[in-house]
Image (cartoon, rainbow, N blue to C red; front, side, top):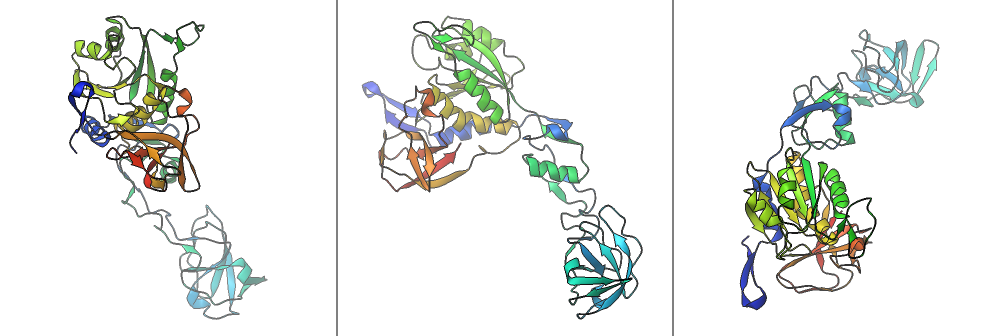
Amino acid sequence: MKPRAREAKGGEVEELLGWEEAVAWIGRALSPLAAEEVELEDAHGRALASDVRLPRDLPAYDNSAMDGWALAAADAPRTGTALRIAGERSAGSRPGERLRPGEAVRIFTGAPLPPGADCVVRQEDARREGDRVHLGIAAEPGAFVRPAGEDGRRGEVALPAGSELRAPELGRLAALGATRVSVHARPVVGILSTGDELIAPGEAWREGGVHESNGVALSAAAREAGALPRRLGIARDRPGEAEALLGGAGGCDAIVTCGGASVGERDLVKGALLALGAEQVFWRIAIRPGKPFGFYRLPGGTPVFLLPGNPASAGVTFEIFVRPALRLMAGLTGHGRQEVPLPLASSQRKPAGLTLFMRGNVEGDAFIASPHQSSGLTRSLVGQRALAILPADRSEIGAGERVPCRFL
């Protein structure tokens, strides 16, 4: 996909990247962080750094799926067969001695079958009398047996590298006897807010000021993406302040700035990055909200994401560009969200040439746009479950037309 050409103010033509190409540019510039070994209990949400193979068959023995009687099916080909009881097996016991012809053992769910047994007859299909069990059905080979290796064979890959370790994956690792696991490190993300108008947390409100909120929201979004946020503070609109705070962000694997990246005289972040020797990969995307989004790289390769200062713009650009980038650095793939085409509940107009990320909810099988679409509103994303992605090459999308919807 090539950058999208559109006419700017004054008749000047500017080249803007499409959002998908911008995501691809970022992805090509990044790679997963190094591996580290952690306790299994601390690996939740992390990405497996290498394949994990089964050290043995899982389960190690044929075992019973029911409470009942373990026997050889050939000994009970018809209803009414009586077999001699040769003991019992419970979960955790050893398989024991081989069954002799005409024998059965009492068995409980999860217990290993004794050698010579190839099926289980449920307890409700049998009747015990003294030292014999009378079967009310004909036995069938393999009935109610969980075969050895059903959950994986020795040497097979139990979980491949890159697997996201959620509850089921951690349970599988525990079933292999693992107590520690090699995972990719979580990226440490420096978050810098900018602007004279910002009131720091804990300070009293003043006329002309706004409480700083993007840093809190972006820190939470970073945690949700699997990263470790680190607040760098607030850079006021004074020459050298953003440069000093950015220069002091050593140890960060990535940096997110919020505000100060547009074209105003007090938008000083780009100049601060250039003064630090950063490379501009791109700036400005053909989207709304969030058009002034930028991507830079500091000497040494540390990525810097320049987010607009408006709350909805910051939230949307983090979701679309920064979230998948942080997941990639953490060894995970994609954005980690469900995305499905859904019909619009009502027709929508939008600027031609810009992809519109519309906030809203899903009711039934339709996307319903929030009435609060202004990029400056903190409530623009509150309670909204999805982003509808309205294509750049359309200025109007009719009610009932399907568009990609990403669940948040």
